[in-house]
Image 1 (cartoon, each protein chain N blue to C red):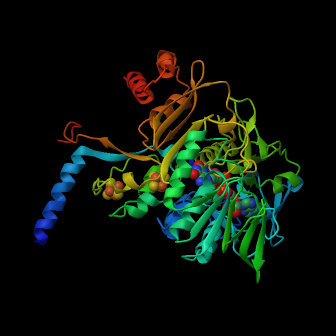
Image 2: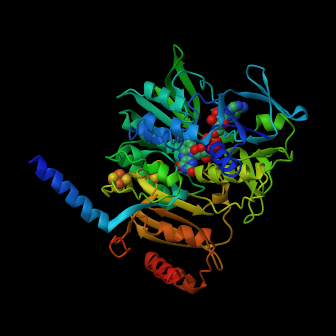
Image 3: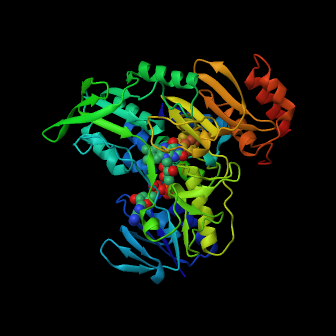
Length: 88
Length: 432
Ligand SMILES: Cc1cc2nc3c(=O)[nH]c(=O)nc-3n(C[C@H](O)[C@H](O)[C@H](O)COP(=O)(O)OP(=O)(O)OC[C@H]3O[C@@H](n4cnc5c(N)ncnc54)[C@H](O)[C@@H]3O)c2cc1C
Ligand code: SF4
Ligand code: SF4
């Protein structure tokens, strides 16, 4: 069972990663920390936003928790196609 | 060269980052009187509602500060001694500077009614204030909120989230009347009522009545009384200009600076909520109380302090906020006049929002998704987007970059125009 769960999770991660990654519109951010506080794998989303950087960490689950909870509409998913981007 | 920064807010931190980006080994000393250092002040509202812990309010870790490399001292500056280019601190010690940045922010305008010093009269200014509120906000007890703008709502909603019975007093007949239009005010008021907040219009606080030193009830100007255990106020803010004024720097409502964030003393700069900055669009010097503006100004000040001439061009202010649970973006000039619930500027506010020139108003949407735009001759002057935020990014860009809107102007102003379709269509063509 546990094995299956692990498998499911990594499968999900692969499909979602192929769909997009989180990018910020930093000018809207007030560094409130809600995104970082709610990230299930403790990525410091807020620090990325401060530096105007996309969350391009491979471990990001693209679960959308940070995007949905940000009260200022700072974060959005941007489509990325890993294969088209030459990541062969 | 020694750079001294007074104030540990976002303007001060941004200045440090930009100084160090140019002069890695610069000597920087930051002085601050807030025992909690640098934290997100807008985030205090979410701490009140319980959406985040207080620990989550700190954007930087100890390691981040170590990497940056500067000295922080918790101290209050009592005086600037310009002739000696030094500062007198609260323990009477002296500290010399070569370049000084005043990033002292603003404080909540105190309530001037009898009873304002009773225990249970609270504001939301610093982390310590939020902690006091949380200690006093007891489930089932009654709280009264007075004031206007974003912070008054944040207080009301925070207290409600803590299980209090919340009453919000408004002096006039609607909420934030000099920024929002009537329909927008009504949307917010209706939502507050659905959340369970009781609104009292035409209600001006006359007196807070205490018992054993604690808030017990309030009396209104119309003679009515209301029993309560807590009174929270947000009636505006005042830039902390005392140091600058005493030192003979040019001060109006804030510290006056030129485009290089320099005061009339070439060794002294100011940035953030305390600075009053020339606005090329309106032609006067303007106060903002916006996190983003404070960061940009701090950044520019830092560059200028290390001799990299970097003019700060005041951009069109915008704020994205949550009013009664509704994400709301306010961009550019959208209102006028004064709001009786506020004295001067509020938190998360810009004076520019009330500099409404002649413009035609177009609006569409109903219920909670609403867009209002102010259409000038060739440009959009301002916008308020409530609810669905799809249009807020295109509008933010079109307004702040002052895009020529002639190709869509007639369609925008057509009777029954579907604003969202017109704007999205224009935006898509513009980007391609
Ligand atoms: C509850 C709340 C809600 C807000 N909501 C929003 C929002 O929705 N959107 C938005 O854009 N902005 C919002 N703001 C405003 C935003 O937080 C400010 O614009 C920003 O923090 C300004 O940064 P600053 O560095 O200029 O000043 P501050 O953050 O005020 O920092 C100034 C620091 O200087 C210190 N200081 C002052 N005098 C001295 C002295 N003599 N000696 C030593 N230290 C001194 C003060 O203690 C303080 O720590 C909100 C603020 C609050 C409090
Ligand atoms: S939740 Fe949004 S506003 Fe808050 S720190 Fe994260 S990105 Fe910034
Ligand atoms: S998408 Fe999910 S995992 Fe990725 S940063 Fe946001 S909250 Fe964390």
